[in-house]
Image (cartoon, rainbow, N blue to C red; front, side, top):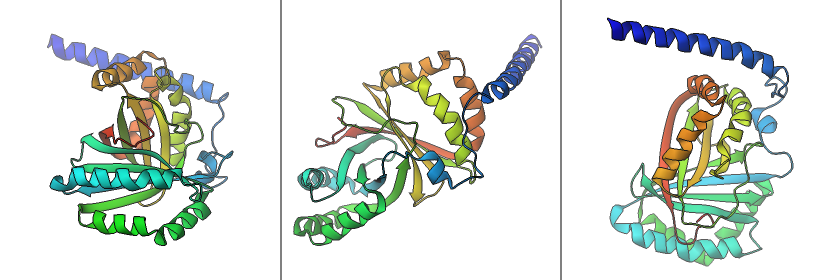
Length: 267
């Protein structure tokens, strides 16, 4: 009985605390710029205005016995595309999944110039004999593949090359339709709680593919560093409020721990 009473007291105290926080949050919101969802598409409201970057993320599920050969194949072709000024695209990062879906590769590309740049790259790659040969060999190694086209949130860092060694976490959230603006409003403040160890790499939301999908990309030295960094966020006043209000927006979430492939700009 004492344990039950103690638990009830704790929950009552927590509910009262969150109620007070909501009132305080409402007052603070009067002074915090929020996006008005009625004025424009969320892609225009939440994406960066100063550039015209489009991102493509690829998920390749590889036959287990082919993973090493697949990695070598990517290491042979990706750097040549990345370094060629004739292609208005950049390889942001390329990884193998360590924890999550096994025998999986994840590639993130940036197209400077948006959809026209993507179209230009695709047209040029069709004429590239080395890339055509890569696709033929890749086809014999894969079990399945999928991709998405993404925009980056205006309040996140732009991904830039970083030295290693690091592990990377890709946290993917499937949001309830119609909640992207609300998510963006909360994370525009929340990202300030997750910058102290330089762990924030990039934040994106989908435009084509699975819609209302958000990807947050983080970098850590190791799994213990990840644990310590994530726990430290709870010491910041306001982080619990962000979690409290954003969790109900999520239909499904997934975490991948990834290891950079040898030619990844994100080491």
